[in-house]
Image 1 (cartoon, rainbow, N blue to C red):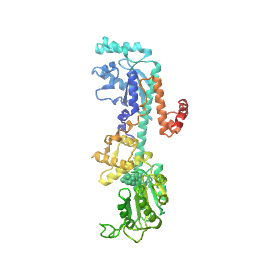
Image 2: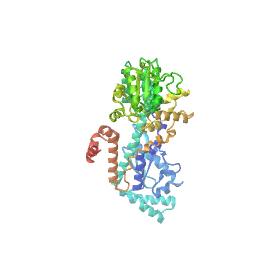
Image 3: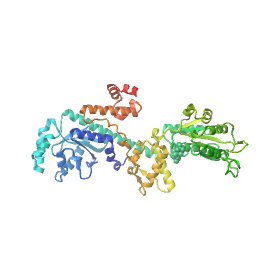
Image 4: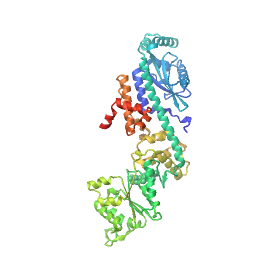
Length: 524
Ligand SMILES: Nc1ncnc2c1ncn2[C@@H]1O[C@H](COP(=O)(O)OP(=O)(O)OP(=O)(O)O)[C@@H](O)[C@H]1O
């Protein structure tokens, strides 16, 4: 469960949607948007700069020591009253401005409220202005011409605009609750995972809870007894070598050697001597016979990494060993016979290479008897928490320290990031966090590498909103952008997109028809 102290208002502040809406509300009506926690304490405002006031009168009131306490009282009073409010609460502040607040509730738990402040409403504008003049007179000897000029320019919202403001605040509210829920779900599943990653989600040293990894594990169990050649494919850092090792330790050959050779790292001549060995006198420095890796791996397993990088002549030699189990050491004249199981891996598309004529078709089929495909980490983000948990545990064992905790915002950000370097990059990041956290028991998100810490700034689906158009157009624009983004993220699965958008499936279908999105989909 999420601890109370784990509610991080800073995370909300960083969400692009909140910043963008704050900007929109600010630029249309000079209204400021604030959060309070469940006790009514203002959040996300710099110390001493109460409210980030937008209009000059609010600024004057909030920056004065005399009137500042009134604003604090209003914030906490609004919070208390909001808890009971059905959907939203419209009220008036000590100075006469209107405020609109929406309760932030996670299930039954009240987290505080969001509120917009610093505007007047058309229907009551004269009354509000009178009250404001009295307040200013009392505290600032008001009614100067300057103050009158400001009062004349204060934002006055029609009832229609009040309902638009409410809609915008609801978007903020939904976004915050979604974020809280995601963090809360993740943390709960992270704790559950930490407890059982040793069992059902593990195959030797490889962990994975995603369907893709579970399918890989099932396949590995099925082929335990088999001697077949296996081709493992996937981007760099997806765990190809780890899978190869676990295939070996689960095979009949587990007590024999497991030897690894990266075929892309060295030139052809060297690779040939490495794999097949050489006889004395084969070349200048060959002062005695040297066994190659095929011989060293006899009865065991040889893992050929980056097989797609081998030259055509090397491909012929490899094909011979695979078909006949024989090879010729460099400079030798006698074929040697070995019993080696080959596992190969590549991050390249061998099928395509076969079509282009850069990889032998016969070798491809010989290697690809069984294919294990490892998807990139960005396509199986469900694995991220369990991998984090494993790497934290590995670090603790290796360094003989207690397993560190990791805070929920940190996990959340790591799940958002795309990990171009796949599991290897994630493993390095966890190690880095463990080192940087020093003696701290808990790892916090501010230790994350910048590229991961700032990740949700990239998700700016609101860049397209034009704040200078009419409010109706902008709200429509926002709705279109959100719906399209969620549909695309969910592969046009309307039920899932509707759930994420917090609307019914029927309502999503109607909106898709209204905006003609099926056509957009076909065109894209
Ligand atoms: N599913 C996993 N569970 C646990 N550790 C993993 C997993 N996948 C990868 N790793 C770890 O990530 C690191 C990189 O994995 P590995 O070397 O197997 O990737 P690779 O695909 O062979 O990379 P490359 O293509 O660059 O050779 C290793 O330390 C490995 O232990």
